[in-house]
Image (cartoon, rainbow, N blue to C red; front, side, top):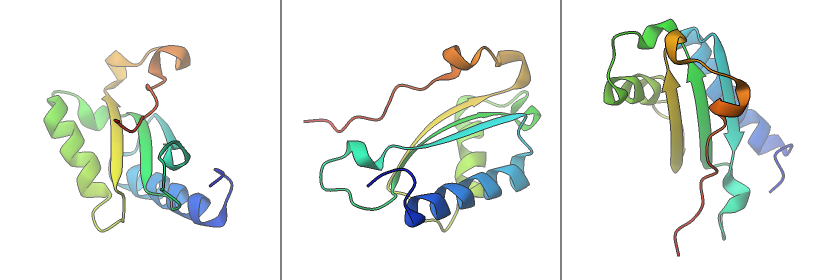
Amino acid sequence: MPDDSPITSAMEDEIRARLSAALMPMALTVHNDSHLHQGSSDASHFRIIITTAAFVGKTRVQRHRLVYQALAGLSVHALSIQARDPDQASTPEDLAATPCVKAR
């Protein structure tokens, strides 16, 4: 399913809105990787790159928990998260996550 479908746009918008409200990120990128998964016809696989001061002093697990709490109740099957504090922010090229690929 293309990234510009109504279902995809609505889910991506909801993810952005929830993360923005809960964590006030300096930078936030949401990628829909659902099209990379055979048999996945809905918006259910996402890759998130987020930079926020809310992550300062938090472990990776604590950061991921904050993201999952913000997205509670959404029907997301797979989520890849790069969660960084402002000191860890880098160039956009460095922040690009490896696409989620289905294991065979």
